[in-house]
Every structure is written in C-alpha cells, then in structure tokens.
Image (cartoon, rainbow over all chains, first blue to last red; front, side, top):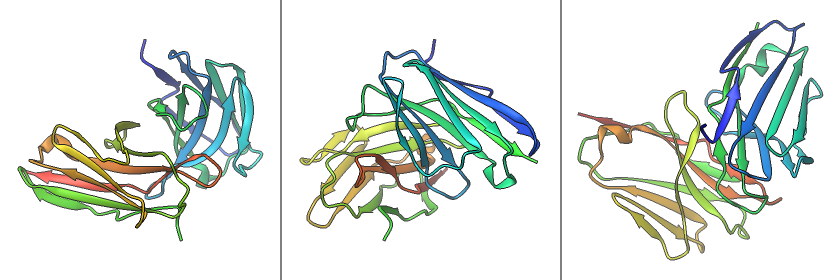
Length: 113
Length: 109
C-alpha cells in the first residue's frame, strides 16, 4: 500500500452538490494536512490536524468542512462550491508538527461547474 | 513581500547543461528548508533538505545563505527526466511550511 492515498482522483460537481474527498495515510504519522493548488499559484495550506485534533484553519470558507476521525484518515466535505474552487486538492502527512518532510497523496482534481 | 519567492521560469536548457535556481524567503527566523519536485499533474515529492553547511546528492547541490535569506539548487549534467517544477519550501512565521510558486525546468534533447 502506498504511503498516502486519496480518492477520488478526479471529481466534477455542480455548485449545489455535496461531495467528500478522502485521504488515508499508511505511514503511522501523527499530522495530516489539506492543501489547495490552483494553476500558477503556490500550494495554499487549508487545514492542519495533529493527533486528529484540528490545529489550524487557514481562513478557509465554511463550504469546505474537514473531518479527521483518527490519525490515519482525513476527509474534506464539500458543499455549495464555486467555480473558482476548481483546483487540485492535496492531502499530506508528516511524523508530527515539527518541520519534518511532508508526504503527499496524488491529489483530487476537482472541477466545479 | 511574499514569504517565499521563486522565479517561475520556465528555464529551457539542453541536456548536459548546468542550471541553478534561487529562492528568497522573508522570515529571518526560518530553520527548515527544502526543495521539492513536482512533475506535471503529480504530487510534490521531497528532493532534498537544505542544511546550513550545504548538501549534495549526486548531480544536485543545495546551498543556504542565511545572511541574504536565499537558498539555491544546482543541477549538473541535466537529464530529460529532470524536467519538472521545483518548489522551494521554508518554515514560515507561524511554523507552517510555506511553498513557493515553483520554478519550471524543461530539459531539451
């Protein structure tokens, strides 16, 4: 099993839909992250979880709702998104919140119509 | 001023060339520095950490200049497979990792 997996890999949704992105890490890490990557822009940190507790919400709109049921799983629930939310959503994990290497999943490429 | 700044490129170089990228950062208290590589439509992967003394891994050399607040990545004897976007990553004001926009390298035959 690869280190960090994400599903689905591609998602197309309308503005009124509700969908969820899933991330799972098999590395025994304690910290997990959601990032957004838009074209021509740097990665934007959205949320940080440490030992399944949210430690950071980087001023993300409430239409994005994270959930971390345990240290290995992370979800991003989506509802009433806007077309400008179309992007690559990357999940990452690290051993802990020290400035360690982060391991990324393959991402979910989201298109909002 | 951006927390982490990189020239987006693209840098177009022939195979075998030596190419260097610089990255500047704004937080003088930063302690952790990395170069990540991101292939087209793939996730970022760690290329190398950057230590105060500099470090080398095969054809890749990373340097840190704390006084001028920049890090560099040197690639010698470029290969076609080196074509990618190289992300400079630094710990920011609040302890988070801050990613630069990336520098795109295209190695041509």
